[in-house]
Image (tube, rainbow, N blue to C red; front, side, top):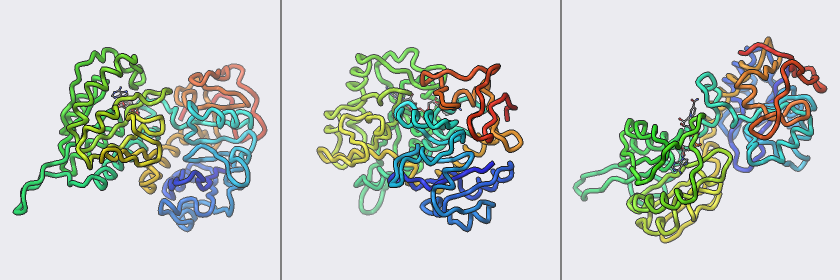
Length: 401
Ligand code: NAD
């Protein structure tokens, strides 16, 4: 089996699917790895390091995309030479972030091409899949980076200082939505010396916020049963969100920095902070809206723009992991290698549709949409569909890794 790593083509994307260390681990599992020249250079990994790790460097994207199994960070996109999906071989396999709940056209292209495709964002949030959970690894980087971005934009410092030149009050940092990114943001802000506050609708979060030395913001709202079986937040009613915005506004006004991360799977980001609340913040204050890609948690957020309104800067960066490409790629590569270790049986991709990890993350197979969350149907195990084209994908029942 040949595994291909093309250079990412999305604007601003500096990550790479595998770093040399992950290539070394993968080669140890049996496959040959081909890496497009320069694929890792924006993340600080030069071609020679890949060669030393056991990879073969190929000049253009064609050979990497045409491999039996292709590993990417961003979903396939359009290039001057055509769409990346057109470069994939029929019957091959693609593992990548695919935004399958939002960018259904790309998923459909993969279906039409007869590719077996796995979407990393659909990895089940279960204990045995933790080391394959790329949403978590990349959110960890986003949370950290969001604080640094805010800190360098704020015209103040974070820690309290008592000096001969006077006393500086510490920055107040409020994190709204304390999942993986929010927890990392709280920890990072605390380490820089800020006074930290966290708020989430899920009740279990209070203890996690307090364990990071932050105060949990209590709102006068009945959050009731706010968490689904997967640990994600449930959507609330519009009436709830209206009350939440009104309650949250006071806490936003008192903060120097607000970091918002609130998401509900498969939905636009909940609208949590009104323009009036933002305008009541002290001039110079900063909001980093990590939900910008899904429409944002704040009324004034614009995706991939810095908006300044009444002296408050609202940062709508949609790809912060790409700003820390070495560590983000290291973590993502580790997620992929662990996932492949799970999928490969003696060097051959072997699909077990009864396995929660495979069934949860696969989106396309044998020319069909097969993910139940996307409205597809998994192949019946007893009557597994015929392998399409390339023998690299063996879809008869296999061992779980
Ligand atoms: P996410 O990105 O879906 O959402 C970010 C946060 O926003 C969540 O904490 C959510 O509760 C919060 N939120 C949603 N609506 C809100 C609102 N109206 N007001 C305030 N906050 C709101 O979440 P995530 O970071 O992906 O984490 C989701 C959950 O999955 C967490 O419980 C996390 O601990 C859990 N998790 C479990 C595993 C595992 O067991 N393998 C791995 C990763 C994450």
